[in-house]
Amino acid sequence: MRFKSAFTMIELALYIALAAVVLLGSSGMMALVTDARIKNMVVSEVEQQGDSVLQVITQSIRNATVVNSPLAGASSSALSIDTSVPANNPTIFDITGGVLSVKEGAGVAVPLTNSRVVVSSLNFQNLAQTGANDNLRVSFSVIYNSSSTRQVYQYSRNFYGSGSLRQ
Image (tube, rainbow, N blue to C red; front, side, top):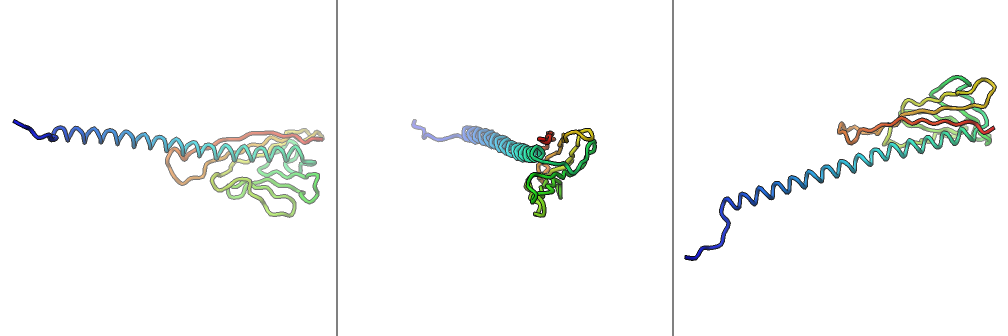
């Protein structure tokens, strides 16, 4: 007797189940890889913008000639300094609508952050005693700006720095 070579129903069901398990596992793995990539992008965006802003502010403080606000022993949500370039006086750092910006002299405010992050809790504290060189502590929070409630889009970090006038 000769038998034709063919799949039985049991063999076919086993192959379909095995293929389904492989496809399900690979799609789950792709979802994990995609989530990790998104989380890395979110963290990188917050870290880069926060570090960049902190560097600009502390460098401006070091290059300033006078701190107009906050006065010695006080704190403020905005910083006003004078520089050695009269056209840039006063230079003001503050937050408007979650965007940290700098305004130099009579010019327009230039944003230091973009719409992908929100800056909050900006605080400048002048630690100097009256009559001493100004020493400013800077702190602010940067939050990734996303309307999604997914955990991979949620990230925030507090940034701290300080600078003294070079006098």
